[in-house]
Length: 289
Ligand SMILES: [Zn+2]
Image (cartoon, rainbow, N blue to C red; front, side, top):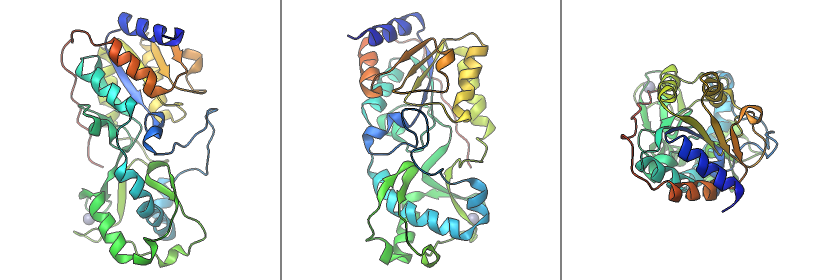
């Protein structure tokens, strides 16, 4: 066992129940790219902003064309070692609440219960007109039917179900409206420039108030929507541990930092923590878009 692993196990013994916050680093092993490099800087141009999406029809054509190709990777992604380890830690009663910045649904797929999807889910579409929600897989069929010539294009997968597809005339891409009201469809995710629903934040804060510590896994915490929980934990005098390779926004306030591959570190922690379970995991109820 490495010194870092031993320190993590000691931390887990002293602080038995955690709120766990996960980020893109938990899903890169599933083939879903992340946004940032080890220094926390953007690897690519900034992702879609809400105001651009709702105000620019061409931006929406471009978004859905890339998403149609990126969905192949996203829909086939399977949970990683990190997701399975966290599901095991949850089943062992060590996780008060699991909150993720990822939109890929892989914690659910691994069997974790009560997951708060802070930034929503890419496998769901919502209508900005009537609020109806529908499976992304259904929209995929509509996109393919309307745009058969685009399906054969090859594009490298990008974060959040996006794909690198440049040099195309996106004005020819046919984007369907809501099947119920004809309104504008949007992936049920929180775009940059959009606010995380307050109920999700409140449920995490309530769980954190009852937990012994905050454990961050696979996130650089560069986005404030996740970093705020570090601030909450610090303000409440609760320890914060991060398992992440590379710089994080919280480095100055961490109780412990484990710079290891997140899947390996969590798998070792899960096998270490196979001990009698405290009370059952707290259920959370993410709200509609
Ligand atoms: Zn609608």
